[in-house]
Structures are given as structure tokens and as C-alpha cells.
Image (tube, rainbow, N blue to C red; front, side):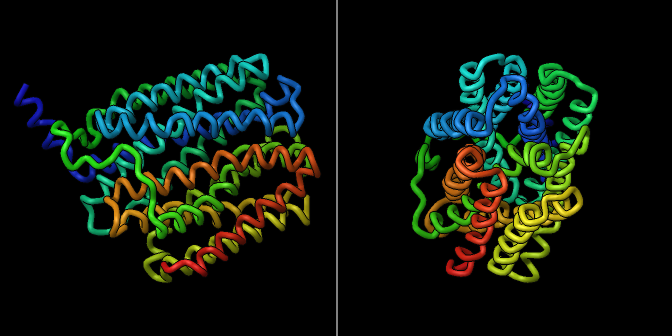
Amino acid sequence: MDTAEARLKTIKSPQVMRATVGAMFFLAGLCFASWASRIATIQQKLDLSDAALGGILFALPVGLMLSLPFAGWAIHKVGSRVVLTIALICYALSLTTLGLVNTPLLLIINLIIYGFSSNSVNISVNTQAVATEKMYTKPIMASFHGLWSLAGFCGAGIGTFMIGKGIEPFYHFCLIAVIVIAGVLIAWQFLHADRNKSGENAGPAFVIPDRSLVKLGLIAFCSMICEGAMFDWSVIYFKKIILAHGAWIGAGYTAFMCTMALGRFVADGFAHRFGLKRTLQVSGAFTATGLLIAVIFPHLYTALLGFLLVGIGVSSVVPMVYSAAGKSKTMSPGSAIAAVSTISFVGFLIGPPVIGFLAGAFTLRASFTFIAIMGLSVTALSTKAKL
């Protein structure tokens, strides 16, 4: 047993740890993108209006809020490796049950479970990323989020294929679940073993961020509203406003995911050259500009251009904010990032239902104008913040 543990410890080089944590980000992104790519299908199956769908999507932030005390306590007690392994498996399994729902009530219940698992994965995988980043002399947080976005791009492509072939969401989600669970079972042993057996210096299970972290969280919050809305409503926007047909319905989502993934792989270098403040200011401007193009010119190619710009805009905000939070002088990196992550992820989850209510009260184009305002808020908050 001692020999096996020693061999495993030797295998856990920085490169192996980075690859393993990156794989977990990818698998988590694949789970979420798979759901996002089939929302329109499930909406049609249950015959839901935009307003009704918006209300039902509030089940996701409910699951998030329920997970906050549990995830913090569980990571505090058993470590992020155990929590991430269990949560990611549950995340994949809850995805399959979403494909079986046939009533709005069942969809609400399953979305609460899905949101609970999703946020547990989010907090624990970012804790793993912080531990891995300490092994390197340069920031690598953006590259992890880039893999999450790359998975979103792949998930969107798979979803577009499934829609084009008329494959039911359940069979689509079962395929994704098998891939995710197999990946977790192979990779979990190479994650950072961060359980504090003595209980000392582990920090509190739940942390309230200080003023500087709240400001960072608000910047990410506004950007994540845009990101969450794009995930859940881009397919519907292309279907109802752009009047796209067939596989083109998912083209906007795919374009958005493509530039978001590419942007995150170059974000660290851009921020190093131009600074964090300028990076965030430009990001907000790109987001707002892209959304306004899609709203003012609701045609296939102009909307695609707009969604490409939105992907560039939101790509670097969250990784840069997490990186800045990890340098907090008042909290440990893990606690600071967990706190900011919680604030930002609320924006990610409340964005889609808010868009649904605005679409019901006004129009879907008007609701996308609201997202553009959130993009401008990123620029405004970044300008006022001391970064």
C-alpha cells in the first residue's frame, strides 16, 4: 500500500495535475452545454411559453443556493477532490433525468437537483484549480476556464447534430453521462488531495467576502448574467427572432462558444500586456456591442457576428476576476475565489429566467438589450474599481 501511494505521489507532477483538473473543467462544461443545447427542444416538448420557461429556469438558482452551505461544509470536511468526484457524477446523472421529464413540475424538481450538483462542481473544481495554480509561476486560471468553454463548443456541436438528426434529449444526455462518468472514474485519483485531517488551518466552511472582493464579484456577476443568458437563450433567439431553420438554430450558440473558448486561451497574455483594468473594460465593450448588433440587425449573418463578439467579450472576465481574487490580502486564495465564484455564479443562473420574464413582458429582442446593458456595466464597474 505504501509503495502504491508513493508511486501515485510521484505521478502527481504539476503537468499531470494541470491536465487532470483541466479534464474536470472540460467534463463539467460538457454537461452544462448539453443541457443548454436542448432547452428549445424541451420547451417545445412541454409546450412552454417564454415567460413560463423563464419561471421554471429559476429552479436552477434555487438549487445553487441550496448547495452553498453544503458544498462549503463538505469541502471543509473531506476536501475538494472527494466533493468534485461525487458532484460531477451526480451532475451527469441529473442530466439524464432532465431528458425524461414530461411535466413542468418534474422539470422544476430536476433542475433544482441539476443546479445543486452544478454549483458543487463549480466551487470544488475552482478550489482544485487554485491548488494547481500554486505549482506554477504564471497564472493558468484562464486556461482552465478555456477548457470549460471548449467543452461548451463541443457540446453545442453535439447538440446541433442531435437536433438535426431528431434524436431525443434522453438518449443524447445518456451518451454525455457515460463519457463524463468514465472520465471521472479514470482521473479522480490524480486530483489534488486537499483534505485537512487535523482540521487545523482549513479555514471556515463559509466565507463572506470583503469590500474589494465584492466589487470583483459584481463585475463577474454582470458578465455572468450575459454568459448565462447566451447559454440558455441563444438557440431560442435564433429560432424565434432570426428565424433560422434546422441545424442553423444552434449556429449562434456555437459561434458564441467558439470565440469564448479561444478568448480564454489568450486572456492571460492579453492581461499581462495591457493590464487587468483595460482587459475588463474592453471585454464589457465587446459584449455590449455584439448584443446590440444582434438586436438592431436581426439577420443570420449579422447575428452570428454579434454572437462572435459577445463570446470574445465574456471570455476573459471571470478568469481574470478569479485570478485577482486569488491574490487577496485578506483571505486565502481558495476562500477568496470561492466567495467571488458564489457571487458571479448567481448572475450566471438568474440571467436566463430574468430574460424569460422580460421576453414575456416585452419582446425577446428587448430582453437581449438588457443583456447589453449588463455588458456596459462590466466596463463601468471596472473603470471605477481599483484593479
